[in-house]
Length: 171
Image (cartoon, rainbow, N blue to C red; front, side):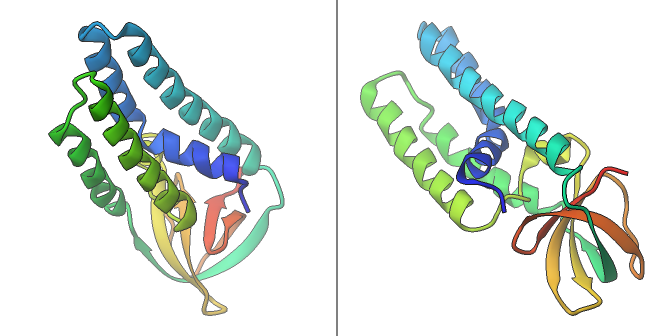
């Protein structure tokens, strides 16, 4: 099970595109250090997740038998909806706007971290990962992240990321 730090990095990476947009906005409005700080936090999340995935894919590999499978890549699109609210109140640089956005992102972060949504991450989709919902031969339903297309009635090598979330093992 990923630590709190890994879950936090996954959350930060999921909002990397928004961090880039806000960074540019703050930078262009003369708040250079705020823009740089936002970009640094987003980059930290993205880098941390990349390292985590590279390392995790080599650890404790197990084999699972898939009975049914369906693609869930579209779930990331519903996650993108949460990008819209910050645009409605794009920070002007005043303290009230920045604090309001901070509270909003904090609540989103707590929900993301505590709700097991680690596999719903637009940056993973952009990096070529696909999200599948699989039903295993033992009846368990789980989320599976893979860079390749998976077929039913196949065995797959995976690494457990969390309860009911698996990551394709390095082949």
